[in-house]
Length: 290
Image (tube, rainbow, N blue to C red; front, side, top):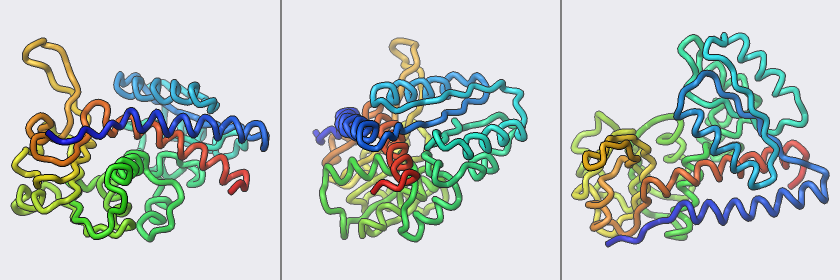
């Protein structure tokens, strides 16, 4: 049985450190990190995510401002709000919860955010900076995944890493971060030939495809470290209730892998913790604090 990588425990430790830093910033620099969270519509999953983020802010002493807009909000109205937040010196981070309603262009919204306040790390300027190794704001899920890998494995240089999934939110930035750590990186996707064979070459296997139990145990190299980014809701046949599962067939893969993240309790808590990390970093950057 492989070692379980406890993302919740790591996230709690990271947040405890950040909470101490926030106290110091308030006391020594009169700086109170602040994030504005914007939710458009009534999507239940989005509302749950926003609630979890606001709760973490409260725990860390980070100020949060919630803006809950009606589902009929126009793109122009949302962009106007973003401009106000960009110009507000007391707001250090801006997060617009995705997805947005169909009448709004998500890319236009992301790229309207000041890159220095883009604590999600999705702005095209931040994506470009990451691609050339000049990190500013790094997407939270890949950043959290990297932290877990470094905590588990230490130096990653020379390792073969396979990232299954090529999204702008996880797959591509994850690959860029692993390249920065001198891994040999392969990005696999739906058109990859003989995907199981590609996965079996990985010392580090990152699953980010959004398909329940997509990665099978016999795709995993014995002793590999598996990071499961997937969060999928399926109906439990035994109870009839919904439950969360990852992109990896966890119970079977755990018999093969050297270490593996569970779902829930793996990457998910790290995503929110890294949002807090980015918010504190953004506040310090904007105040000129090293």
